[in-house]
Image 1 (cartoon, rainbow, N blue to C red):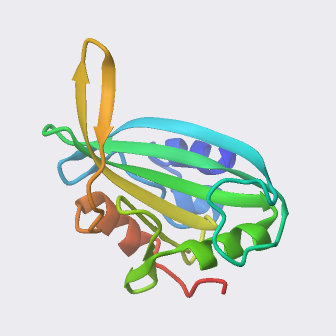
Image 2 (image 1 turned 120 degrees about the vertical axis):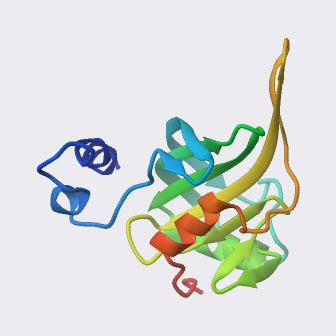
Length: 174
């Protein structure tokens, strides 16, 4: 994961492309239409999935540890509309995580893009990461901090469209 981020930074300078550095296709740009990349956060987490875990789908009994790493990118425009992009690699318990998604997704929205919750879309890209998940929001900032209002994700914002175009969905693993 770190190599992908470093190669993305290196590729802004003349003389080396991202493809040459990491051998994959482009990383996410700093600007997509009216949306600017305002935050990049590295994520790494492990969770024990067992019969006491919250929100397990009916019929799920594939228990164990799921570990994931990746990045959360935040894009936002001048109207405080934004999209979180989660780029996720499952490093342990991939079969458990895939089964959770299979039994949990509510609907296929288009192509091989699925809705997990109203404000979330996810797909299995053809390269680079195991899963890309987007969350569309509008933010409000006041003296107490920033809050996020999540509506229904449509996939019609420029950031999600760019993501799907550059990291097209493949068939799900199930």
